[in-house]
Length: 296
Image 1 (cartoon, one colour):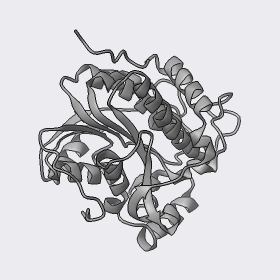
Image 2 (cartoon, one colour):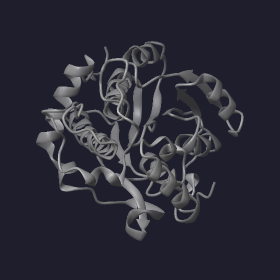
Image 3 (cartoon, rainbow, N blue to C red):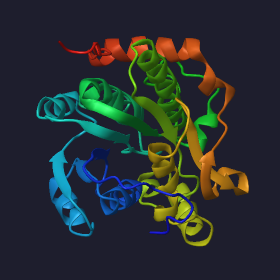
Image 4 (cartoon, one colour):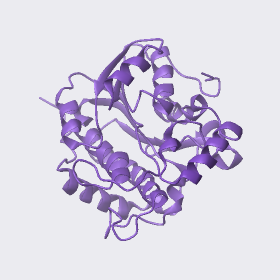
């Protein structure tokens, strides 16, 4: 993987959890972190695929099951955790898929991309010592606000709208998480990243066959590699950035190029919406922000 665009420090002796680490951006992120000395726990829905992917990683890895579409699986992962987490990368996601629901009845894209990671982060937060990086998308700009009156989009579901709403939720989650961490006096940093236009298998599950075809052509002719698309995540995880920072490619309108800090929509800076989303997410998942007071 080409990493000269980011100077990455030695990460030996540290542990990272990367969701969706068996393919695409998650696998590329895992490769970089492991090569820099990190022990990377690959949190994956399919353990067989995870173990196969781990064989292609040069470094220390461990594969553990995690299905973000099932809160019982999220809780089981967290309950089985022991020890510090220096970096949590909320990477896994689904994009523009046909309408469906998670095991808990949430619209799948909102449920997996946001609520699953919301629950996982809060359940693991007492173990986190460094950063929480959540992977969003430049497509969060496609919606002007979270539809709090219809989070499942029952009255107007389209795959693209649902995806955009989930990615806006990722940024609002990061914003409110950082506020809460600061209020609690925690040194943990919450940041976000987006890959630009990267060629991965994410687009191959889109509901619209024409869209899938166009993306397949774009992946071959226009998109940057998955390895390059993972660099903003690495940037947000390892560079000197402020809380709630958003990293992404810096060239061609944010679709490709070296990573750096990037802009987001006005809606993604809405602190009132961020607090409301947090409250609603707690109610839906039954998971709350933990007590981060120092132990005796």
